[in-house]
Structure formats: structure tokens, C-alpha cells
Amino acid sequence: MIDKLNITALGGGTGLSSLLRGLKKYNDKITAIVNVADDGGSSGKLRSELGVLPPGDVRNCLVALSEEESLMSRLFQYRFPERGSLAGHSFGNIFLTAMSAISGSFDNAIAHCGEVLAIRGKVLPVTLFPVVLEAELKGGRHISGESRISKVFEKISEIILFPPNPPAAPEVLKAIKHSDVLIFGPGSLYTSVIVNFLVDGVIDAIKSSKAYKIYVANIMTQPGETTDYKLSDHIEAIEKHSYKGIIDIVLANKAIVPKDIIRRYKKNGAEQVEIDKVNIKTLKADLFLDKIYARHDSSKLAEAIVRAVKLKKFKREKK
Image (cartoon, rainbow, N blue to C red; front, side, top):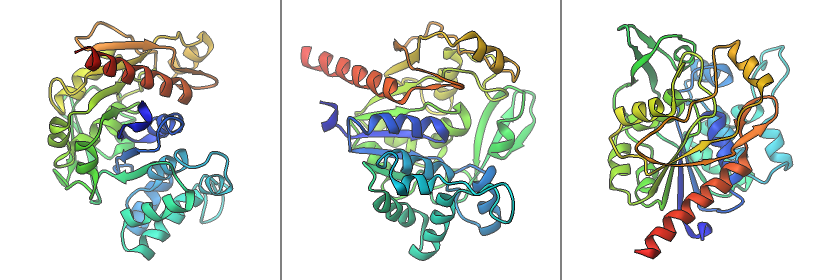
């Protein structure tokens, strides 16, 4: 059933690529819409030195949708040693940057890289405009730059893109409008998920779409960005930057994160997100990848999404 649906996921960072890695086993009509506000690490260097859009999150999504463990996917993730002029850069980031210059645009470069990697689905940048993310903090201060926002230990009141309302990249609005399922997250609340809603036309497209809208809640709070946030706080922030009722169902992790991992996260100011009561249907499942980091398990997350979609279909058939 789910293999016949058009699925679109909006996000960025490691959360989106983790989702795609599991979901591609059930569906090859996946569109990943990726934010392009990243200004840190290899992406930030390429952005400041060459004026390109940040390729890192896009690269991760391309690899996530490719044939796992293929030579090309491993090559795209290869990171040069921490010395010399290529220190910190990944081959895939440099490849995307070079392909942008050869093909004439970032979206063309992504399409060509998708062919090289033989991906199952499609990856789209949410906008082709160079944008800067800014946060207005509760105290009134403004912080500019995605990498700086994630390190500020103050409550965020609102985030803004500069320039305001950049146009969506070709195909983005069409993909959203014609989706059967829309997935938001998992990922950094403000800098990976909400940032996509600030692109011109995205919210209107989501409103007009008849898609089943799923929000994948984070397992842990993020120091600074969502310190002390419960599930309800995450949803409130999403609705503030979009509209009330944007989410049909929430997928939340019910597994208890092991104490040794919790202790390590607490040293950095993070804790497990409390799944408090919200006025949205919530499907709780074990989504935890029990390793070094408190992250979503790709396979468990994909299985939970399949269950959520089946639940929706069952209700429609009953009616």
C-alpha cells in the first residue's frame, strides 16, 4: 500500500537522512526537501569561499536514498584528513560544488548526482537563493547564522530568513501539493524543520495539499535550541511558524534511553523529550537506535510511518 503513495519529507541534518534510509525500503516515490541555511563545517567553508549553496545536508540525503554500501555512496561520504587545504571537506560536497559550476545550477547538480548514485526518489533544495537564518530570542536579542543559533542557550521566540520569503526551488511546491504523505522531521526543530516553512509558498502548498501530515518528534532536546522543551513545546513552535492544525499525527519515541547515554547528554544540557499530552493523535513506538547516540533507528522509524499510514487508510475505508 505505502509503495503506491507519493511521500514528501521536509527537513535537514542527520534526522532527514536517517528517515530516508529506512523509508526507501518501502517506497521509491520519495521526495526529500532539504533546507539550505547551513553555514557551518565543510558546507559553511564552501559557501563563504565559493558562494555556493551548502551541499552537506543534500549530500547526506542523496547517499541515504542510494544503494547502501555502494562504492559511489562511500566515496560521496569520504572526508579528507584534518590537514591541508581539503581538511574537513567531504568528497561529496566538493563533487556537488563542481557539478553546480559545470551544470549551471545547484538543482541540476543534485539531479546529476542522483543519477550517479542511482537514488530511489528525488532530492530538492527548498530554495535556490542563498539565505541566512536569524533567531529572535525571548529577551529581544537577535542571533544570525544557523551554526550560531544552535549554540545559544536562550529561548527562541521566532526565526526569520534573510532575504525574507525567498522563492521555492522548482518542483518543491508541486511535490508538496501532490503528496499523499507529508513528513516533518526528525531534526533540529528550528534550524532543520521550521526553516523550510519560511520559504515563500511552502505553507500555502502544505495547506492546499490533501496529504496525511506526520510530525516525527525528536528523541532528545537540543542544547540551546530546545532546552527544556516538551513535545507540546515543539508542536507549539511549529504551529507558530506555520498554522494551527498543520499536523495530523505525531510519531513519538516511547523507548527509555539508557542511563549511560542520558548521563552523557545531560553534561551538554540535553535530556529525553517528555511526551506530554497534546491535542493531536500521537502514535508512540520504540524508535530508538540503541548505540552511542540517542538517535532514531531508520528501520523502526520507517515501520512506524507504515503503521501510521495504514491507520489513516483504515479510517478512510471505514468511512
